[in-house]
Length: 105
Image (cartoon, rainbow, N blue to C red):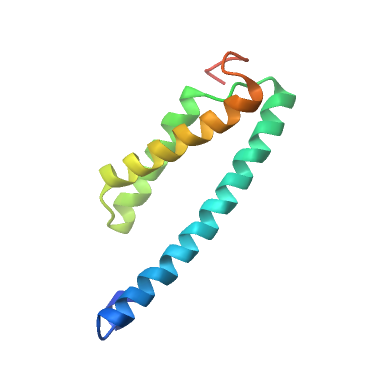
């Protein structure tokens, strides 16, 4: 499979491709944050806490597996997602409070 990077003829083109990918990643991260904001509403309604340890483990396992399938270093993916997850939980806790509900749901 030919990647978009393989089609770049020089560093100017490659940098433009990296910038395009960065814009796409930012857009996807924005969508993910919107899901986190919706999760706050749903968790409040369902009496769930911000941190659900089983879900955190599930997401990280999914990320490691998908990274492996795509040829991305699984440890790098896990570090990035761990940071994103912790940021998301902190965002949720500001609204829900840190001690609400169960952590195994």
